[in-house]
Image (cartoon, rainbow, N blue to C red; front, side, top):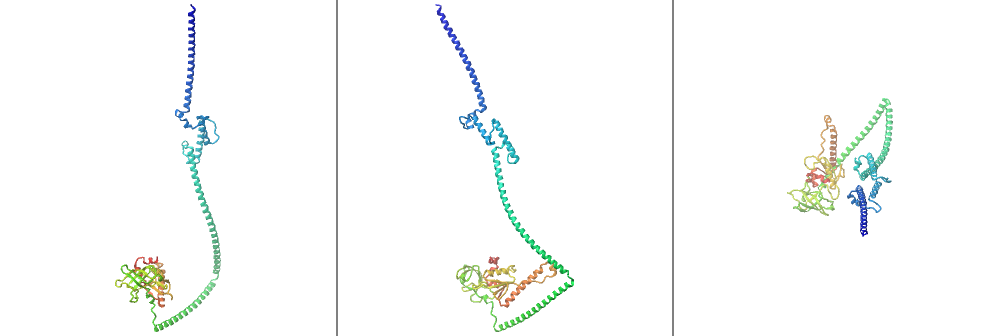
Length: 486
């Protein structure tokens, strides 16, 4: 039975061989797997290192938001390279050179640095000192602002240039006109010079005559003037003689007339009333007179009020003075500005104003020195204020007396004084002129007074005049005549 155990030994041998083979295979497989695993691990480490070089874990996680959307055919790195190329294209323009990103950025940086340096060389104050702190857009903004300022300055300069051009054109026109006028003036002066030269030549020729001829000519002219003077003197003496005879005849005629019938009172017209009192309100101090707008009455006109039962006194002083403030068609309202308590206004009392007349404009002549406010001082413009008052109230004013003159108002006679001595003239050289002017005013005053008396024209002094126009009390108030003049 020896064959039985041998068969069992072969099976175990085969089993052992199979086990060994499988062990070898497993070890081999494990070795291969280990080697591959180590290779994969090494590759993984290398890939991780490459990944870390490309981006940090945070950047890798946010690569989509950092780089932006990409197509399937693009990589994130390619997307970034494309963006960099686009920035270079916008910054430097085409073409975009090939090279690394570092090279491209360095090229842009170099171009930008050159640009900033060149710009600062042209305009130092335009760009900051450190090129690295100045961005391209900031530099462009500064350049734009500078350009706008330059454009604005250019526009302003153009405007000023246009104004200067206009001014220059106007100046040129004026200069041409001035040149034309100067040339005309030059011609005029030249003609005058020629005339003067001719007169000089004539005078020189005259001077070259002998002394006897000049004396003879002067004597001839003197004889002719003496003859003319004698003729004029004879004519003047004849005229004076005729005037004296005419005055004598006129005086004789006037005396005969006076002997036959006395002269009429020429001042009657001055004492003629203009209206009468219609109504009296003693409480308010207001009266109404029978003169209205139909009679040419106006506000501001004054009247003196006189007793109805007595004639107007020669002094002209009435019992009251009134001033019109309201005018109706046929009557006027007036306030009482001065009255005599012992002689109150009653119905029917008379109202009169020497200047004003409802039918005509009286002609006045004023002369002399006036004290209108009765303060003892001569008013510098008294005559002018009297004349302005007359015009204001409808009268007329003349500088000389004539047959058309109705009334004459005379102030105090001008004071001429004595003629200044030689010593006084040395101290005050204008004394003679002042004395001559004073004498001229005095002669004018005396001439007006004399002619008025010769023509029997009524003459009133300052107080009588103010009484007869109802303005005596108002004249004492400060600014009374200035108010009238306005």
